[in-house]
Every structure is written in structure tokens, then in C-alpha cells.
Length: 237
Image (cartoon, rainbow, N blue to C red; front, side):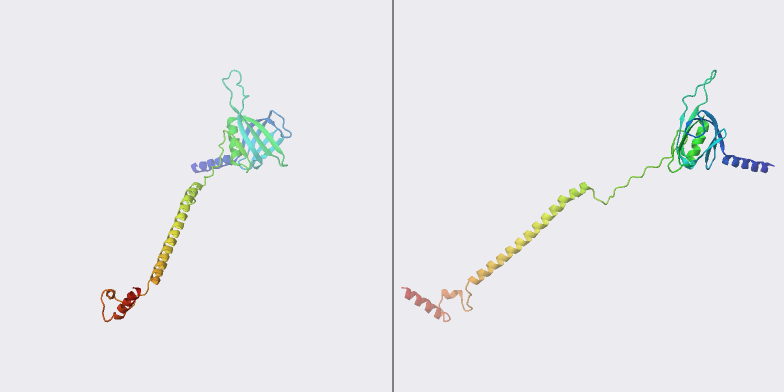
């Protein structure tokens, strides 16, 4: 018996979860065909496809996919009844949608705060790609801001590039100065070699039989040289 009760309770709970909700509303404003202002109606809110406004024999279907905008605001015209401290807070729910013919439609419904919360939650649960939901009753999910792109650490900023330019110019100048110095040193060495070669060619080649003592002592080896020197001296006198 207990098991049967649990099964029945579970089935009823599931049925209630997937059943349509009927909300009592008052149609206050809009451009719905065949519906006049301040008409008492009911809003049949389905959990999956959409909702239907029933006013007398007129039914207006509003699929969730056709809703383009929905918002909710407190009804400021609510006045407490005489002898009561306050009236129940009402909300004005405005829904904009496209009809089956693609024509823009709008309706403003006056309902209790709890009913407005359930209606806005159902709309928010099945948003179309271009639906705008503006309400303080249903949580509106906003897309997370895109993460800022991280700067590339390898890429040098413009300031660093400008700072590196003088270093490059200085290195080029130093390289050129080194080349000029090497060239000058090489040319100087070449000039010295040429001067030495000229000096060497200008000096008479020393004879193998010359001796420095020939100018001071007369020997059998240098007799001809001394005779030549003496003959030159006599001719000069």
C-alpha cells in the first residue's frame, strides 16, 4: 500500500511539473485583434511550446520562439481597498512578439507578482535568438566578457624598437671605424715596406772583398786600392 502511494505521488508530481499553468490576468493594453482593453482573461502557460491568452472565445497563441521582447514592472495604479491596510502588489508584464503572419504584436497584462514571476521565468527559459528580456523577477543571463588578448611577450613594443635603433647605429659606426683603422694600419705597413725597399736599392752593394781596415792599413791584398788612392791625391795636387 505504501509503495502504491509513492508511485501515485510520483506520477502526480511529474504530471504537475509538465502541466500547463493557468494565470489570471487582465489585458490592459496592446494591439491584439478582437481583444478590448481591461478585458479579464487567463494566460495558459505551457512548459515547452508557448503560451495562449484566452479572452472569452478568442484565443491568441504566443509561441516562445516568436517573442522578441518581454519586461515586467510594478503596477503603480494599484490602490488599497477601503478598510484594508494595503492591496496585493500587481505587476504589468509586456510581451512583444510576431504573429503567424509575421506582423508585430504587443500585449500588456496585469497580474499578481507571483504570476508575473512564473510567466517571465517561462519566457526566459525558452528565449529566441533575438529575444530581449528585461525584468527584475527573472534572472537575466548576460554573456561573460571576452577575455582580453594577452600581449605577445616576444614581440618588441615600439618604444623598445626605438631604443634599440641607436644601439644598432652605434654598432655600425664602430664596425666602420674598425675597418678604417685596419685599412690604415695595412697601408702604413705597406708604405714602410716600400721606403725600406727604396733605401736598400739606393745604397751601393758592398763588395765581398771589402774590409773596413783597408782604409787604415796597407796590405798585399789592398795594394791596388792604396795605389789608386795615392794617384788620385797626386793628381789633385
